[in-house]
Image 1: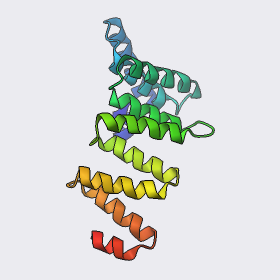
Image 2 (image 1 turned 180 degrees about the vertical axis):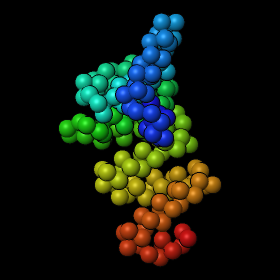
Image 3 (image 1 turned 90 degrees about the horizontal axis):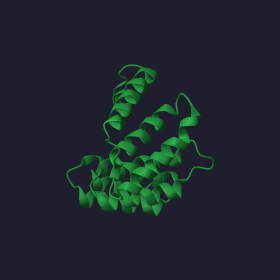
Length: 167
């Protein structure tokens, strides 16, 4: 599923069928731990593109994964992603809480950090956006993307001197 999403390998339906087969095999051999349920949730989340009836099973499986292993960073990230898409209204605040939990477990996780940044911007928390970017630069100073984002944030807000200092 991730290969399709990131690289457009095959069709979603074809990849979905292969993923469903692999999940059935995992279940058949008793591999039903937290990672299994997180992956099953991700399968259902990807299949939402074709059929909205996959939404509830996606959420249920992510929650089961977290119940089985409260340290499953991927399950927190993927559940947060699900909560901000296709819900009315989007559950952005709950998603941010889940991302905070993921980041408490893995502070350098770039997916969680990126999603947190997007979530803060969507929630229009300008003070949070800047503080988060500064936190990320301190945590991961070699990752240029965070510096570039903060520079853009300053420029887009008319804070040209601060933006120029970042260059």
